[in-house]
Length: 307
Image (tube, rainbow, N blue to C red):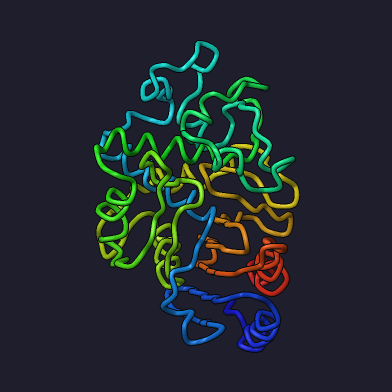
């Protein structure tokens, strides 16, 4: 079923009330909705915050496809040889699923942002030094430090920066030419929240995933990775969804197929439903209401996914 124009019109009215910079919808092979708050928004590099994590996941998949990383079961001690004994069971998969077991209070006392890591002298070492409170693989706890370690691993195995690797392997094939990626003080690309991209380029990332890793007849990242990285691995948080490999998974009892999404602080999203051939992008500055765009998706769009 196509989404009625009346519904899209109501959606636009709701969006205009909020600090939403842009919203794009691509459905069944065509763009059906495009909203920019003003003329500057279509060319603006939006700070996408934790949507960065999902792009890092794609880059990990590409590194595995290239043989730079053997597989997700590779222990991270391979890349951080001075890791203490109790942490040698931590694997790349544990980082991707945010289940290494570190004491990490990003969704607790830290108020949703990893300020203690940001304020540290060495971000990678700060993460590796955190004590374990659970065994690896036992429980998902939101952790931007995991994403930063994945960035460091990509830089180690590729011999280049996260920014250069992302450009050569992902952005360049997708004709993403304008972007910004910040680094920590040690030159490690900020894997958890360092990227800024245009709205149309976020849509390209979503379409790449929808197309099982194919862009203009070229396999950019393997179909197997796209499927594995977007399939539920752990329970996440009731108010957000389950967790996969740095992608969130929304299961709705009304639907026979899940939606998966990238989510960044302030209301930045790439929302994908493969069964419905659907991609939706939001860029926002809703710093007190990060979940509001997802609420709009649930209210105005999801009912058209029903069987």
